[in-house]
Image 1 (cartoon, helix red, strand yellow):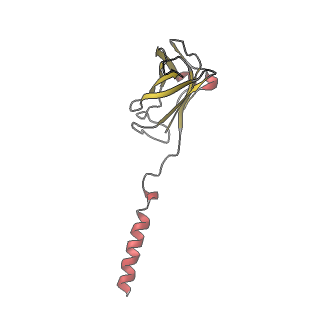
Image 2 (cartoon, helix red, strand yellow; image 1 turned 120 degrees about the vertical axis):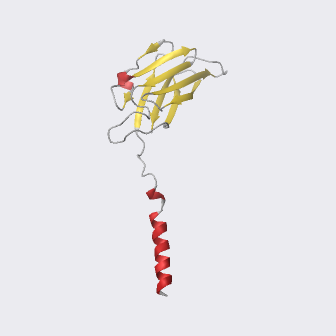
Image 3 (cartoon, rainbow, N blue to C red; image 1 turned 90 degrees about the horizontal axis):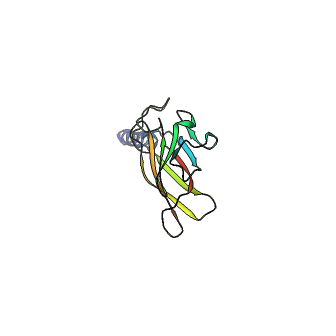
Length: 145
């Protein structure tokens, strides 16, 4: 009887120890960068510091480049997964990106690519009008981990 009790106790202890709480403890969501792209036809610019953020630097570390009609590249310097964050270390590639069209015309925007493996984060954004054609648009972009 005592052996059964010991074996059952060991099995129970193993399952309690190997619970999901012993996996990656998680960091919670950390906002690394956000921008309001408010100049849809500008070739390249630094978004307003009032409406942008960068975890490791000033909002001036963010930039937006218009590649062609409705196609943009957003770059946030220093917040890629290869960068070292105080208290967090280097995270590698990954993260989560959200983009939303902004303004009075019926337009939608989507993230078509993003890169986080190096020191900087960059995302390709594509915007289209209601008929599906490429269209310049204001948008908000959020990058978090």
